[in-house]
Image (cartoon, rainbow, N blue to C red; front, side, top):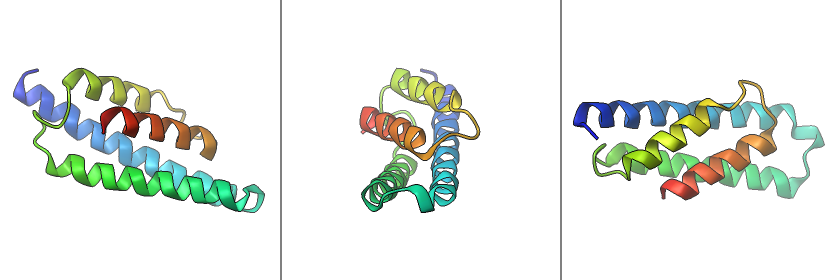
Length: 102
């Protein structure tokens, strides 16, 4: 992938991950009273894992972070998430994306 295009995808992926992580936090807050403690902990672990991965991704060179096709696929997955979604769905997608890219 061309360096400029790779940098753009890298930057867009970071923004998409941050947006999804923020939406997870909002969904968690909205569902707090109806969410069992173990599931809430699972959500918090997912948010923390995503944050750590984003930190690692920021430090990585855009060209060497991971395969460009994987970045594009992850970005497309995140872009397809509805603006308002349940915490469980957001958590599942974030975990899948981070697992695929780690």
